[in-house]
Amino acid sequence: MRRIGFKYFYFYFLLILLSFAFHSSIFAQGEELCEELFRRHGFLEEVEGNQALEWVRAQNGRTLERLKADPRFAQIKAQALELSIAKDRIVYGSFDGKFIYNFWQDEKNPKGILRRTTLRRYLSLDPRWEIVLDIDALSAQEKENWVYKGMDRLEGDETHALVFLSGGGKDATLVREFNLEKKEFVSGGFELPESKSDVSWLDQDTLIVGAAFEESERTDSGYPRVIKLWKRGTPLKNASIIFEGKKEDVGVGAWVLKRKDGKK
Image (tube, rainbow, N blue to C red):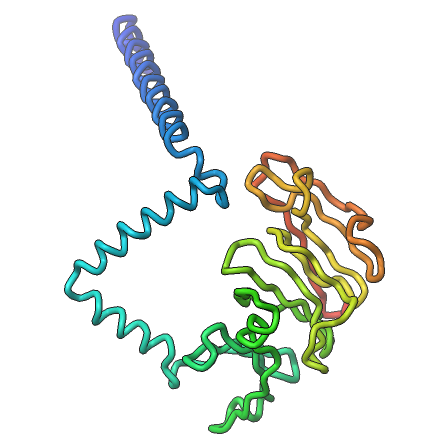
């Protein structure tokens, strides 16, 4: 084996020291930059704060002016609108074993309708969609700007579902139990207030809830920190905790996996 002389060892050692010094300087500059950015824009952490909203409105205004200044803006906007409401766009759906469900938006229903049809009709030229939930009608009835965020059906069940709604399209959603057979919300059923919580079915009388309702239940990012089991007919505040994450975690979640033999 070739031996490295002392002068070479000294040279390599010096390079290592210089490398550490260089990277330490870079890290220090990075920390200073982060501190400066937070000092100038830290108010954006309060996503619903007045200062943050005013800043966003100002940036939106600048962006819109920049876009409108492009001579292609009007044409591209018209094309995008035409495509978004085209009658011949692909109708994607989810199949629950009996019905195919599809959420559809057009000129008549800008907020959208949740509709369904059978597999046989879906494959035909005349699907004859049945409206399950009209978000435009619901918004008008409740005088809210509801945005549909999805539905979670209880697997193997044709009745029980959870509907997710957002006020104005925020990340936070409220959750209501929905009867798919009667096509209506369940009076006295499961209902979760607006938050960034997660929820899924365990069975028809039990929900798994990633809770983010109270400050103590949220991570620093505002997402669920604790997982709870919520039984039907009991207060949400009494739901039992089955897992807890750390405050510095982005968020924790849980869901149900069903095996071929039916076990969960």
